[in-house]
Length: 173
Image (cartoon, rainbow, N blue to C red; front, side):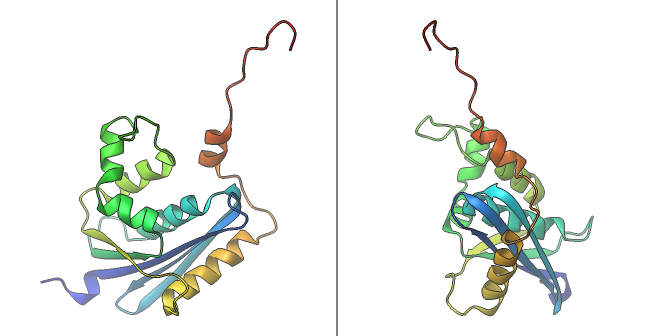
């Protein structure tokens, strides 16, 4: 039986407007009623990346060396379904290749998330977004405020993925 003090709820949300564009994430880490809020933003990113970043930062906020039972609530079907369905683990095992033979996206964040979860007792649950769930609404407010920051850092993973390899120009180009 799991002690309530060793159970952690992590509520997450991501925001991006436009998508892609300035983005932010919001997190609430709740351990036996002790709450901690986290947020951050990037100058150009995607909503899916911010949903993933929220989960990553929530797990990173857990005390080092402890293995509490963790439930992560997210309104992102992408995050919850790809993780719970084992797709992310399968992509990594296949060199980040999808079943369609296309390259998976957000591999930097999927890799970080898989590494952080490891064999910890962490489960992901979906919650309907913008449905008056108080923690989801608060995370949304944190994420929106973060994306509206005045000086946002680059999302290196996104910007690296967007870089196009230089093409060899022809004689008349």
